[in-house]
Structures are given as structure tokens and as C-alpha cells.
Length: 385
Image (tube, rainbow, N blue to C red; front, side):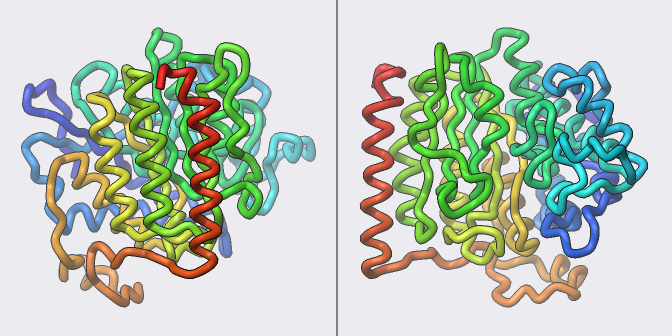
């Protein structure tokens, strides 16, 4: 299944994947289904995106204690290990464990360490120059803090790899397009100018985690290096893409990162059950294409996505973009035959644009323009724009 990694001069991309990703289950009724990872892998296979001479698929290993302690607090790591058997002391609740979002179940530590190890593997391949771009679809668990689980996330792999890069002096730009604010990453680097965090998401007024407002711009040396684009819940393709293009490329260009880390959650899609904004897969792909052009070294992570049909489409499309490949117009028949249990409806690969009209759209435009103008006054001058 997995191609051995070599130092071939023609190697450009790496996909980090293991069947072990599917061994952990958040439990019945939980919105986050790891089956989406296997579904994505199958769709990439059906689209023949493994056979490219410039790419490889890499099996990860779990992160070690020393690797995890670059970001995690020792007492939290100890508590995670205790919870791995499926039970933990009462005080585990103080660490965000044992909630409906972050249940205590057998294997939570082992699975989280494997996901973190996969992101570390992606980061090291890119940092070393073995590949220019790497993708870990299991990653992007952006809500967890150094001492606390939150929002389905036990170990914040994005913050972990950024912290590891910072130890070696790299400047890192982090771009998060998940419908939910990338709070755990923002707060981890809120007071440093070594990391630029940008998050475009549904406003915290209407969606978890209730943060990510335009006034959160960093503090101390980090002032102007935390950038948030909170979207009104009625935002569509036009508003999402305008805000994205007006803010993210110019700031990343001005920052000149050594490495770009992105969180490619697809829960802002129109059909996703856990958000209110409604973009299309076409808008998602446009954003990913723009991200590809921002830095020569790119680590992509997965993230949110609770309509499995569109998770598979979106992350397959992102992998195609990373490899400069075109997608088929429709889902391959071999893939549909393999997953007959899923009601696919329209089998087009990319759906129609998501556009709304009327007074609701006018109000959304006004809010979006105010947000961008606020950032032009507060964050842009810090970067000479």
C-alpha cells in the first residue's frame, strides 16, 4: 500500500496515512467519524493519485513522550495516558476529558499520539527538503491546548509541529480555513512574532469555540501576528473568497514564512451539520490553490468535516492541487460501487457555487467589509502593508 520514501530528486509530495487511523472510534452518536479518513484514502486511490512519479505515501509512527512534551504539559500527558484504558480519575475532567466532545474511551492516547506523529513526519519531510509538500488528513486538531482537551481534539498536532519548528528558528505562517476558529494554535503563539496565525471562520458569536474576533490580534511582540476573519453565519462563496483573498495572501507574502502550515477543515461547506456558513467545494478548492502559491514549503493538515461525502471530495481535491493534477468531473464508478452504503446524491466531484441573495446577503457583505477594513487598520501596518 505504501511506497518507500527515498531521496529521489523528483519527489515533491508525501501523503501521511495509516490504516491504524481507523482503529479509534469516538463512540456512537459522536459527530467526528474517523471513517472519513478511509473514505478519503479510497477516493484518492480511485482517482489514481497514488501512481504519480513525484509522490509517495508514508506510514507514520506515534509521537514519543519527548516529542509531545515540546508542546504538552507533563501532567496533561500523564492524564492522557491514564485515560487510554478507557477510564481515568475524577480530576481528568479538569483537563477537558470525559465531556461529550472529548469522551474517555480506550485508545484515545494511542490514537492521538499516532495523529501527532503523522503531522511530525509530514513536517520533518518538508523541513528537510525531502518533499516540498506533505498532507496529513488525520491532523488539524486545532482546539486542544497544552494542558487541556477541547472540541474533539486531545493533542493539538498543528501547535506541536509549529512549536518544534520554532525551536529551530523557523518563521511559520499558519492558515486555518475550518469553520471553527483555530483557538488552540492562536493562543499558543499569541505573544510571538515568529508565528503568523490566520483563521477564517464562522463568528464566535454563533459557533464554538466563541473566540476568533477581529480584535484578537496578539500581544507584546506578537501584536499584529494573530489575524482573525470572523464570518457572518450567512456567508457564501463570494463573501468567503473575497475575505480570504483580501487578507490572507497579502499578509503571508509580507511575512515571508520559511514554512506554511494549513488546517484544511471542510466544515464550512453548505451541507455540514455543525456550522452555519455555506460555501461550496469550488470555493474550498480556490482557497487551497491560493495557499499552494504562498510558500514553497507546505505542510497541510485535515481538520473538521462532518459530512463524510464532502470530506472525501475536499481532501482528495486538496491532494490533487498539491500535485498539480486535474480531478475527474464525476466520482469514479469504482469508488461508488465500493461505497454503495452511502447516499451520494449528485455524483459530480465539485458542486455548484453557493450564492445567496437579498437583504441577508447585504448585511453579510457589510459585516465582512467592516472586518477587512478593521484588519487593514490594525494588522496590516505591522507588516508594512
